[in-house]
Image (cartoon, rainbow, N blue to C red; front, top):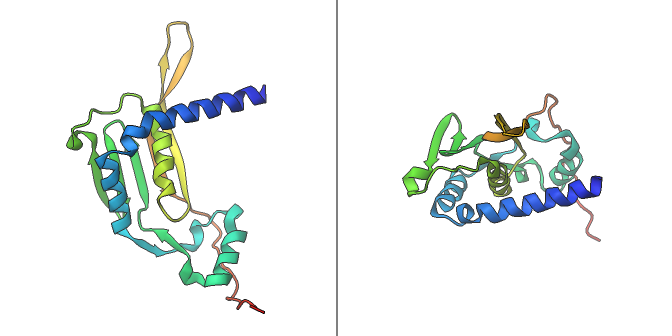
Length: 171
């Protein structure tokens, strides 16, 4: 049964990627990625490194120093049926579909795939969450529909404190 679920999940993932292709190739997405790039990078927040990634981050810090570890300046992203909003240091920048002469998104279940695409273009560690609402169907079943997807910078309670930079031995 597990294999069937994996195949179904991969098929749904491929369908979602194919469905969001027009949005990913749109002028709006180009503007969003440009805005993310223009916001730039900042020094990595020590508490934004997940516990599972600390070993790798420690290795990178010892190779290039803490100055080599950067994160995107964007703190949060909010995706919903009306648009995509970037939050950077408390400043909200909204990219509405209507501003680009697009209709609002009716199938919001594709928004997590759009969020994954955006996170791939941002440096740092981010968590993707979705809020949903329930829709009753005719046969008595209940279907969950995505209301909003939120991408937030990861935060740990324990700070990341790598050791001093070690010089590599070349020969």
